Length: 148
Image (cartoon, rainbow, N blue to C red; front, top):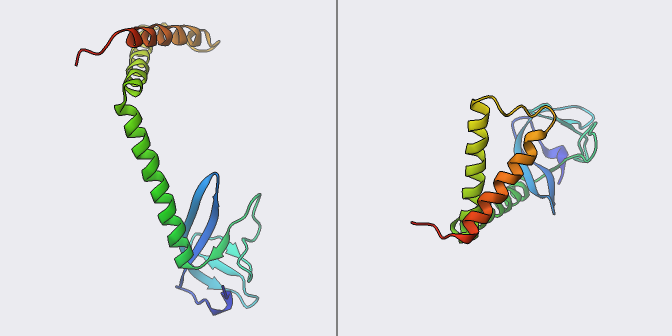
């Protein structure tokens, strides 16, 4: 990609990553290009003439074409949609319903204890009762079928 052809107001892709963490890219607008070729985006991030982020702490971002950025954004949306579908399928399964019911029951029990002043987690003592309540409820829901 030739950054020397950019002008203020142009749209440009900013690539973050595409690996096991997921995918991330955005499309930004160029606001200023210095005589040395440093590019400043609307969000204030600066890039050198090679498209690398200036002053990045850790892993920096770099500029890319808008087409590449759109492809990465689309891939991220597909991955997110797939995870949502997997979660919905899990929640619809009997195991997912049991886990959701147990978590909701534990939250309700802790809220009631909080309401009446028994949940002061300064020393972490309620964590033990929280896990005991969860075990009791999970045992109950695994042994009994739901009525509806």
